[in-house]
Length: 588
Image 1 (cartoon, rainbow, N blue to C red):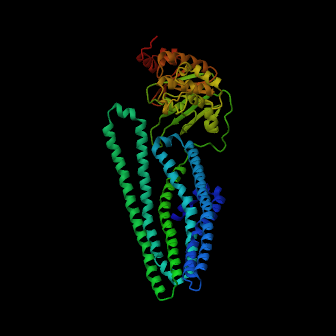
Image 2: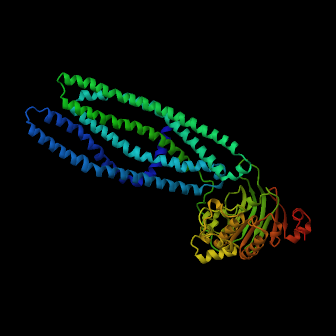
Image 3: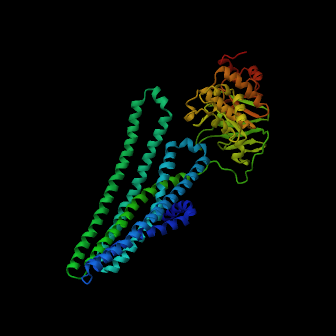
């Protein structure tokens, strides 16, 4: 079963690697030159010692000239040739890993955009960011280390072993006699290291999730003087990460201690056996010097391979976390036969709609049926928790209903592609989100292709132009993260301007003017009424005075329609609506 998981695991990653296969092969060829050139140095040492320095038949002048020739050749090879080769290998390796990481993050971002609102309601933002940034960054080692350096180090091992066997087969066997111990160490030590690495990454994600949430709510922490309490909570989470990190570090340190100890045994064996062979006259001094030089080149790549196991263990643990995110299923998808919702006016209807957020939760909406025709305005009122916002959220298909149907343009919303459906819907919410950037940038989210005249016209319609031009840089003023540099009313007016610029056929106003002062609210209400004339408009309102003009008012209570009718009709009934109206001291 594990083999099947591993196959899926690597297939998923190779999809990102495949476009760069030729670049990887080119980098490997260059790497072979890079690692192959230094492997010739011990042979040069052997030649200098045995054939020049220890050659009694050669006079001093001849020895010097031969030595100069050797130096000239090696200078060209090791200085002039190796430099550009080293540069090319490093550049191409970094180029490939950077491009693969670029593709992976683009894929992740596209995936995040398609995940449902339910996923984001149940997942901490910091956890998502940790996988997107930290874990994705670690995965680049799978290519750089696993697909390039490992193969180059393996080539170096084979290359060096070939020269060593050529020089002295028996001494070579002595040198590699501890190789089986390496294999045992890797099998025993690295299995646990992978789990510890994954645990540490999860703990780090916990810190990021906590930090993100607390920074977003810093005003609440300060208003309740919770700094000391909050620090204690953070210390607990930070302490959990410390424990996981130290457990990982202890095991990692133990791993390196075992590996380095094994590595130091080999030179001792070579010195002992090789020195004895030289004393006995069975091995030349030059061969011994060359062999000892090769010993370093044998164990250096071997140690890198062991270190690579550590890095790859960490990278594979990170990739598993990234893959878990990529494998997160889409709750909301287009039907395979979905088509584009055409432009123009569209009626909205709810037919026997039943809806709940959780499979085992209670019903939020119960058997709702109503119709809103183009040009009509329908308002939803009632106490909090009645299901008003949930109902209008079904129109752009933020959620799918369990029973009944939501109709737009004469067909179920699932008949239309989500992109075309949402492009025809304009929403102004009670708490509208502004992105960091300029005022102009935020208004143009309604239509990124709009010109300056259209932007200003939308701002004027939303009663926002006057305050915008009085800002330090007008429309080029930075609003800060989440629009922190603007007042609540200013943010709301920019959000309304955004919808004016979008010019949707279906307009949804969910407490759209709740953050405005009475004067601004009155001005915008007039404009919104003008905008609503040729559109299908649904309004969720708390201030009943703002919806008395509606063609129909729906009173929601506990997920059902308690009353419906015009303002005059509902006041005449003297029911729930009339009571709410009286509570707000708005009696005519």
